[in-house]
Structures are given as C-alpha cells and as structure tokens.
Image (cartoon, rainbow, N blue to C red; front, side, top):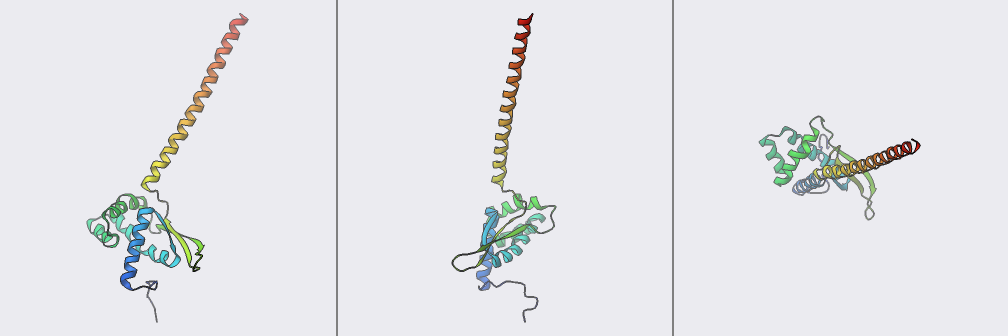
Length: 164
C-alpha cells in the first residue's frame, strides 16, 4: 500500500526525477512561466514553493540549500533578490497552474505553471516605458489644448479691439 507516499514518480528513477525537477525549477525561475505536463507541474510546485520560502528567509544556509537544487548562482541571486521579496506578505501559494488542454501527439494533459502576482525585472522596465509614452502623449494633448485656448484668447482680444 502506498499510504503517505507523496512523491509522484513520473515514470523515472529517483536521480532522473531529481534532475528533471532541478531543470524545471531553474527554467521557471529564469522565465517566470513554463509549459509542461500536469503531473510535472504539480510536482514542480512543491519544489518551487520550498525554494521561494528559502528566499524569504534569506540566510546563507538557505542560499546554499537553494543552490543544491538550482545549481546556478545567477538563478539563486534572482530568486533571493527579485522573486522572494515580492512574496513577503504571502504565506504560501506562490505558483499558479493553468490547464491548457491536451498535447496533440500523445494526448498528455498540458499546463502552464507561473508565479502569482510576479513581475519579471525586464517587465517593470517595459511598463515604465509605456507609462512614459502615455504621459508624453497626455502632455502633448494638454499642450495642444492650451495652445488652442491661447489662440482663442488672442482671437477674443483682437475682436474686442475691433469693437472698440
């Protein structure tokens, strides 16, 4: 009986499963969202949520524990500096799994796993650029409106002078 056996085996040996979860976690941290099968996404959720909890604690010991899984210093830095600080107020539930349907060739259930309420470092810059464009457009519109008001005032002054 498999009572209290929580690990999904995914049809792989333990070493292959560990490497798979390590690579999927690294991809998720690097890209912010990935497409994979439902079973892998559900198992990946356990790994990534533990990594984010390590990041929230922020000690050297927890950095080393995260490095054991990710095996890349830049990803550990991204996890601890960009991802985990965004979840300081959230107590778990850092990822979201969205079911996308079935793969064509083998009908495997496919899901998108992503971080909840997370903005990638590059996305913040893109948003600020569009905000700047919108601000400049509104300034241009207000300046054209002010020009028309000034022109109207000039026209009114000229008309008043003509009447006098």
